[in-house]
Image (cartoon, rainbow, N blue to C red; front, top):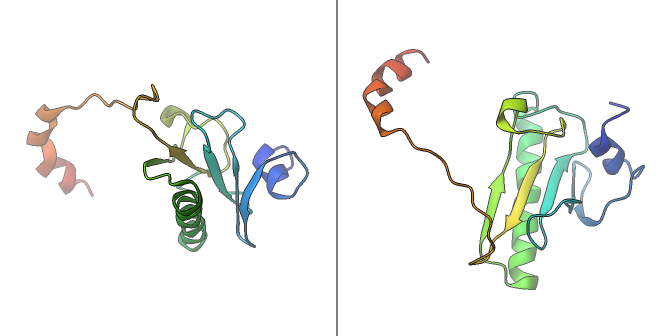
Length: 132
């Protein structure tokens, strides 16, 4: 995709702050960080989202996620991270090139992913499972 900013970053055509790279994936600091060392990991090939990426490529990206968090743990002592992917506009994906966020967390960092739970849906679990 010629207009995809993440494709341009992976090809070295747009500025980024590289954390790690191999032949399949690229990790770089998020230009709009929510914490220090907030990192994005992308496949070098263009896949729009989790539904588009092949299982083989996904495994390569997740392997780099593990390398990055291990690097941060070993070099920086980071012991708390959130691993986040949003796939689709209604899931708040804003760059339509598959990517995984590694967000280091600290106590009192004022970041809060809080979900509204629906315990009443438990009674529909049998029906939900029957549909798949």
